[in-house]
Image (cartoon, rainbow over all chains, first blue to last red; front, side, top):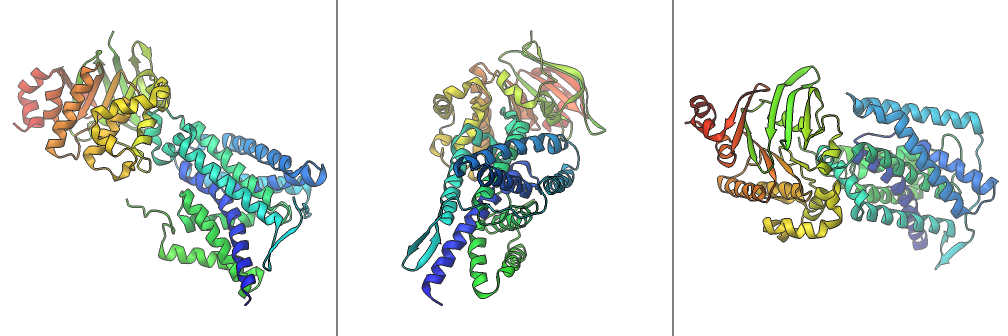
Length: 292
Length: 236
């Protein structure tokens, strides 16, 4: 096998993986803070895909503004969904189950709403930038480099916000001990709402970046959601660093997998990896074993 | 006017009543002890005062203001700091970040850097380990960090739930001498302890809680002289 092909596959794996990481960090943020799973995460991805399609492909707004509009709109949508669907469940008994059912319901609702309004057709979004970078026979499209750049920048920003801002401090405190956070002045319910909004915004950002290389359609959120769960379990649920490393690991594993088999096998690779990790290290590769 | 007055509070977990008609008062600058056996409702009482548990009836006043309907996160800003049982530190955050959280909900946030230096003069051990994760600390250090975090809010009332639980006798002495120091700086202390001996030594007045109700209150001198208290709680 030529070395250029191997390098290209690693680079592609890292690029796709960085998107998995970005998408999954939204899931892990919600799990870490609210201790709930969000099955509607893929639909925020899908809605952002449509927003980018309409802004960029239909209205001709430039890609940066289109992305910004999609991310901001989905952030607000996330907040609305949290307030309407989830907020009132959190303080009730068995919220661990009711929130799963509620987010599943939101997912089905949003999917069918999209289907009803926009139809089942696949919409194509043109590349944000054309051209291909070629170094020593390794060819990478600029669009893919843009994806890598945006995901690195957003992961670094997210890390900075979590680590160094007052809001990040409150969010981490809520995640680690919600009672103590309340005693020290954190309004955890508004932290939950904002966390949900930011999580949706992360899904939206990854959708905006991926829209040109995948087709926009009502079901486009399903595959990233499943992959996202693989990534967060791979990395350790609730671990931000785990989600990033898990995402990149999955990206590389998949891109090597397709060298030896066909593209349809990428899901098989992802879920085999998941089963292996659950079998050997149920708390995830980078998570901490829970002791009761 | 007392600093804190708890009037006829009754609290429930679901349908199970945990507190019945609790009355309690603390004056400014006072140390008050609440003693009682495990499961008597001591922790529930503190959780009710700090808003983590809603009372079904009764009222709680702090500096004359009714607080029983306020959300838990609003109380630290009024000057009530609660160090819960088991310390409840933020284990994956550094000592510095845990201390910062003490200032989070209060007007002291703008003075946070100076306050960290100030509380570290009371707890020099924390200064040495300021960048270390709270989860790596020993039991005594955890209690000190939890207390220091509360002081970052410059509270008027400090509520300590079982500060000596799980600590070696020598460390308990240190913790209690620190509690007295804090009190001398003008902070009222509500001290909840199973370790009745230590609590009665530190406080001027005490309440005895059994089965969710106050069965005795008065000066600690009276408590120490009471035969049944001595037998049941002091092992004398």
